[in-house]
Length: 266
Image (cartoon, rainbow, N blue to C red; front, side, top):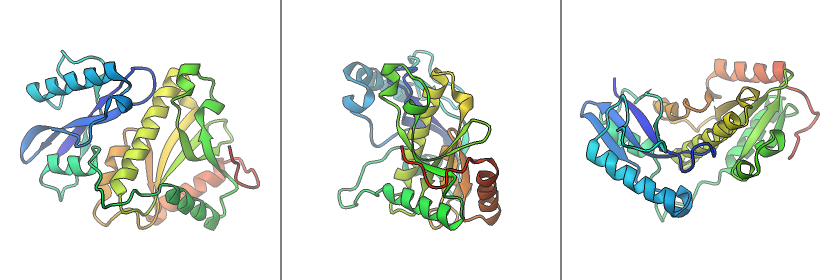
């Protein structure tokens, strides 16, 4: 079975966000290191110093060709390995699949960006159709719900939907809707959740939230279920097109959610 592990770069450990910059793959072609086609510049990497560390670390990765088990010990703590995940069985070239479907890629100039607000609109329509929209609130602001140090509050991203549970915890919901750029949506959800999880851990509030990505109808191409494995590091994934998963998802919100009569806006 072909597998892979993403290599993440954390500009400032403890600040809450990680950037997928490479991966180690193991498949029919053996074990390989692959780099993301799109590497962050100094602005995205956390400043000139962090960018320098990223470039030096990337050079070291290329020269040492890390194994699936561990990264070179000479790397700084800014680099870490994700979980080992499976590549879809239909894909023989593990390295090619990871570059195309998991790691950040180059944007085509003639391809317009997917408008992710559409995914949120699709999600809201689904909640309304299932008569659970009064349990689901929009725009969860982590900094408003959990006390964070000033330097951390500024990097907290907003989650599209959320459900306040009766036990006092919060279920965070990020939709993946139909789009011409599915990979971009997957990377968006991964980046958002990975950052919030680190912030929650830093604030001692990890047990207060659960992260979930729900895949709307038509968003998952037939036979492409493996593309969502990249999210399993940071979230539970629910396929709305699967009747049993959809029923369990809706029942969970009805049973655990606090009703607000109408969607709450933050």
